[in-house]
Structure formats: structure tokens, C-alpha cells
Amino acid sequence: MNNNSIFIEKLRSSGLRPTKQRIEICKLLFDRKKTFHFTINDLFKTLKKMSSKKISLATIYNTIHSFKKKGYLKEISVNKDKSYFDTNTSDHHHFLDINTNELIDLKKEHVDKVTIKKNLPGKKINSIEVLVKIENSN
Amino acid sequence: MNNNSIFIEKLRSSGLRPTKQRIEICKLLFDRKKTFHFTINDLFKTLKKMSSKKISLATIYNTIHSFKKKGYLKEISVNKDKSYFDTNTSDHHHFLDINTNELIDLKKEHVDKVTIKKNLPGKKINSIEVLVKIENSN
DNA sequence: ACACTACTTTAGAATCATTATAAACTAATC
DNA sequence: GATTAGTTTATAATGATTCTAAAGTAGTGT
Image (cartoon, rainbow over all chains, first blue to last red; front, side):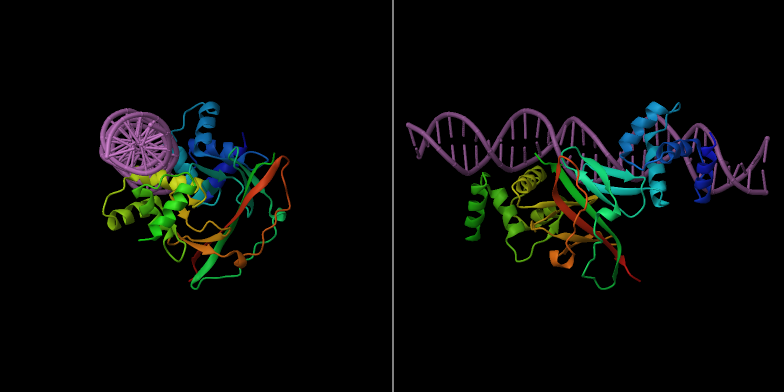
């Protein structure tokens, strides 16, 4: 696999040592056409199935947090019992299906630009996140 | 205190027995001019100080969940380590100060109406929530 | 007022996700 | 190959929330 060298470079260039575990996780997260959402638990289970060698849960937490800090992942907290990570780090919003707890990307062009008509002294806007909760219509 | 009878009526009319504990919590949450945000832990500490008789943590959880189910409170999840409840149950949005973790109401008129140009088959919109993260501007 | 029943409160145990610990391991550098 | 700084790991610790089951209380009928 030659994709590995891309990930190795990516990791190294951001000051993270390209360990077996990190490369494995990179392949799982970033070696695909479409971005996606996952929970730590999802990732742990998938790695357990897919990978020959077991990656410990602590390592998964460590790695995901490093990746988030480096901007390779976004964290989306939709409710207290579910915290998702998103491999799509571009500016976008989400649907949350409250019947299934599924999180779905909402492209930027599907939401009118949100403008805030109030600002607080000494503060600036860091991000604007729209969460559209949806449910079965019948 | 005659306000109590208002809360007793409110509780009874929604099928909740007006117990000492629930009335106490009602007074703390709803007997004020302005709405506010709180965590379960905030509430527990305040009740411990204010109240003559201790209300157990389990009761606080039970009560807050009942109140939420009855629509007297809204839950706002801004990140995984903090879950706020809001006594303002009207349709509105929030600022989150990422330096202090403070949650601040954003009146509806301060945000342009958000319209979603996409809909998913078999699904309808339940709510649209805007979270504006702010940080120190210097 | 009394008894009955269903609901509520409570302390403490159980659970679950996440973080901390500290020993073993490994990549980078010389 | 030796050194060292960063990484992984199993396990323990933590902290928030939920569960449990026993004791308490409000509502209803008598």
C-alpha cells in the first residue's frame, strides 16, 4: 500500500510520529471517497474487526484527540449520550435524526448564510453551527 | 408564600404530584424575572445552600427530567462535558463562550431566519438550533 | 380521621464513557 | 547500536448519570 506514505507524511508534517496504530487509524478514517461520522466506540469496534493487531481503547482516544487538535477531525456534540467525530472538517451544518440518532451532513449551500445581528464586547465569533433536528413525518 | 400555589397548580395540572421537593425546585427555577441556564450540579449546590432540607441528587435528576418531558425546561448540549438546562423554553439560539464555557441567549430577532433548502423524504423538521461559538477577540 | 394504593424520594450501588497512570515499547537522532 | 523523547498499553481512577429497592407521602375512598 502506497497510501501509507501519504499518511506518514501527513502525520510527520504535523509533528505526530507515524506509528503503526496511527497509520492504521488514518487508513480507516481518511482512505475513502466520502467523509463520514463516527463515535469512538464505532471506531474501536471496526478496528477490532478489521485490524490484525488490536489497538487499545486508550490509543484510540489519544489518537482521535490528537487528530482533532491538528484539525483533521471535527467533534460534533448533539446530545449528552452521543459525541460524534466528523472527517469532514469543512464549514458545514448537520441534520440529526432524533428517531435514529443518525447525523447527516447539510451542505453549506442548503442553508442560507446565517448572520448574527448582535455582538458581545471583547468577543469575536469563532464558528456558527446549525443543527436541524428531524423526525419521522408520518 | 403564595407563589407556591401557582407551582402546585402547575405541577398538578401536568400530572406531577406537588411534593415539597418539586415545589422547592420550582421556586428556584421559575420564581424569577429572567430565564437562565444551569447544570444539574449547579442546581444541586444551590439547593444544598438555600434549602433547609437536603434534596437528594437522584431526586434532582428525576425532577429535572420530568420538567423537561413536560416542556418546562429545554436541554442544551454544547459539548460532551457540559449539559445545560434552560428555563427559557421559547424558540431561540445561543452563544457559547469557548473561553469560559458560558452559555448566553441569542434572541430570535438577532439571528436571520434560517431556512433549510433541503428536505429528506419521510422526515420533517423538528427544530433548528444555532450555536454561535465566541472567543476573546484580543 | 383512617386505610389503601400508587407515586415519589432516598442512599447507595451499578454503569458507562472518558481520563490518568506508569511501565513497556518504539521512532528518531546521533 | 545507544540514547532519549514520544507512544502504546492494560488497568485503575474518575465523574456523571441511572438503577434499585426500601421507606415515605399524596390522593382517593370510606
